[in-house]
Image (cartoon, rainbow, N blue to C red; front, side, top):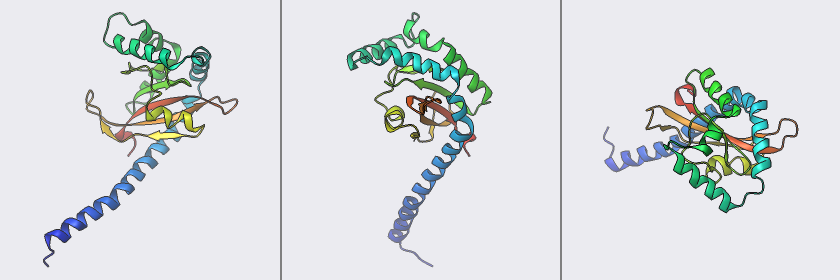
Length: 194
């Protein structure tokens, strides 16, 4: 049977458009399942909650100019020898805890970082490109929206590792009060999701 090329092309476009939301929905369902099974528990660990609370007490009064200056300092330190701001974040107890979670994940977790109520890094397993995440979806789609908010990034190939991964971001809450205190972003190896 002959099907005109235009009809075939239109059918292919229609099928692709219909399949795309289903694939995105499947990705989000897989990421939600991974979040619930593997991440929520360690996000409420005392090492994380106390580090975020302590930094919130310091940064609560920062204005945008101070945040921007800190972000510029961080960016200038990336790849430098002298890195006091980065070292203060990378070498703390909460960051050690995050690195242990990556190791325990046996390849399923590729990166983890924690942000305070202003979107500033509190702890990170690896050096991030910037200090302030507050202008990115991983922060404003989570912390600003409340205790149960999540943001699921697209599955993408990490150029530095060649691994396909997705970022799962979610609001961190104080376990005692349920009040949002910050956010966490976790890079997950796509193979662990499907």
